[in-house]
Image: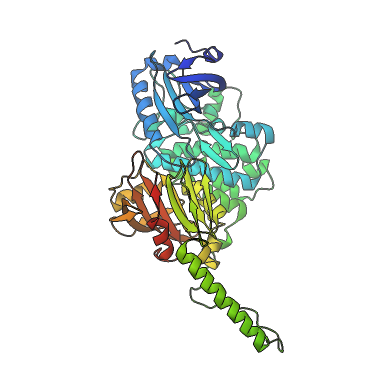
Length: 503
């Protein structure tokens, strides 16, 4: 097959019908294409045919693309298929995101507002840390590979990754994997690399987001690579005086020439940046003691309710309580029902005072504070708990809900250790599993039940959960009922799972 950008428009490639060009680079062209089998549009990345000559590259590309496809994370662009066509040309079919990439964002808007910097890069860091936990290194983190779908961020172009035990450098076709503007020194030197080379590239992108320019700008690639190896960037505060001086120290550490001097993870780097920009949050203050009665304003002297009126109020309250109990027991007025969707193919009851939402095709959530918890869960490992911690501390009854998603990475027969490893890459904090999973039921289906906690490593905020993995045709279903107390059992959970039905 002759790869000539627009010549493929209107043609069929590997079962996909090409509609338009949406991106290109030295190694590949990305097309908008239609998958007629599922009636959906995809981003179809077709690699330069010259790369197919390198058999080692071909094998690694297909293997690692399929590994990425198995990683479930809300900020990693889903890969549907990775293979070669009848002519041997390599391709990847991915979710099509109708939005801007960060490169275009910079071009349109210049340096980003500080709040937006935190919001965007927490999601990118979460995606990278999850990939690193699966022993995959991106190696080409740059603005063009960060996609913006409203407030949601996707990291893409994982199709040309590299296992951490490999060394960086050239393919047999003398093709660099990486972009010199964002390339870590150890990658330039073709040394052994790990996730800290992605942290360096991420820091270059953050520097550009903060200042509107790259940390190193040179007239040619040789001079640029030398700058990465031997020169220090201008402090960001010199280019953007509104930034605290503490930001300089954070950026210099993430851009250190030696990987050993950088942060232990991308999430730790972004959290340090957030603290340097805004200062430690109030969430780090001691929590109020549990069980201490809250004070309330006393009525002024001489304002007691008349006895008759007080009796009426008490009667109304009693009648209201009876009505609520009746409705709650019958399920007619006290409960609503989530119907099930492609993202969460399970129907379940939830209290009518909650809000149920489906986030794209990623997960479903029902909670009294759905917007706060949707933002938390979508951010993954690097989540900011700023909107959730006040609920946990001051309004714990609302810090609860049901989270549901399909999962490929959790086997229904997983041990506690395997569950922790999988959930650590998916959940918005450090996961602990209290004990080994046990057989149980969700609706009329067999399931495995487990209990644990999710902890914000930065502030100590914590949610408990009772979880279920339910086998079904296709992917299993993960259900997590979370709460702010030390355990999440009770009538609400019994109803949530007892009347659930799988589709």
